[in-house]
Image (cartoon, rainbow, N blue to C red; front, side):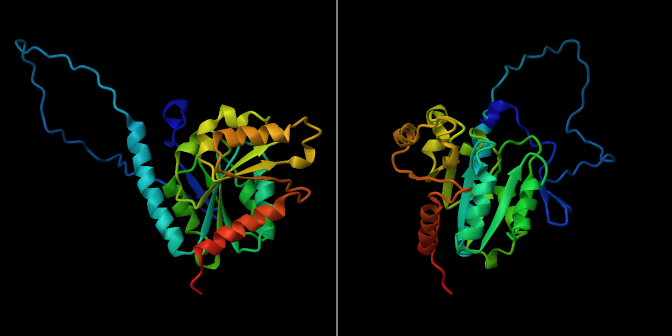
Amino acid sequence: MCGTCGCVSENGVTILTPDHSHHHGHRDDHNPDHTHHHGHTHSHDPQHTHTPTLPRTLDLTQSVLAKNDRLAERNRGYFLAKNLLVLNVISSPGSGKTTLLQATAQNVGLSCGVVVGDLETDNDAQRFRAGGIPSIQITTGTLCHLEADMVLTAAQHLNLDALQLLIIENVGNLVCPAAYDLGETLRVVLLSTTEGEDKPLKYPTLFKSADVVLLTKLDIAEAVGFDEATALANVQAINPTASIFPVSAKTGLGMAAWYDCLQDYRAGIGDPS
């Protein structure tokens, strides 16, 4: 995961609003005029001998994830208070995620907003807005996943009180996003027919954490030689409790069942109005 893959956030996470004004997800308080006052002075003593300090290894990964988990629980309570069904949608790049989510937002029958995560550009957010779907873009730079604090900051640029469904389109990656809870109601993982039937076996951590798995691009399954039965068996071997929907956003195949699933989950959240 991110503790070893090399992705870092030092170059900045940016939230792009529709007018493209930039809101940064971190603050740099460095003052070039600031002078540093140290609590000790150095005086050379030729009789003084230095005891070598043994190196220590600090596991920063655990503290980072623990902080994110606390913030995710905060998000979960906040979204629940807003009566929002929240999806964290994760997939490889090129799985048809944006196309599927456009169709979902337009046809599910719930008022919907989208938070989009990508390393660069706001192309996907513009695609959603062109279809009349409120959306906000997070550009993560070299960071290969979204984190709970980024999501809340971005989501608050949407009128959440007017929404029933909030979709978080995570950065295209099957590794790092698996470790980060965003406070979602459902974790939705996509597996496209172009990726091969064994993806769940190769990336078990992500598929184990999925509430829903969507087999996408079923309209080209035959053309690419995709074995749907084998793919289903592999998902079930890794995660026997996940709901699985074979779908094609292009043709509409299986999409009604997916929409019904979301409607049922949203009804379970309830709406006091």
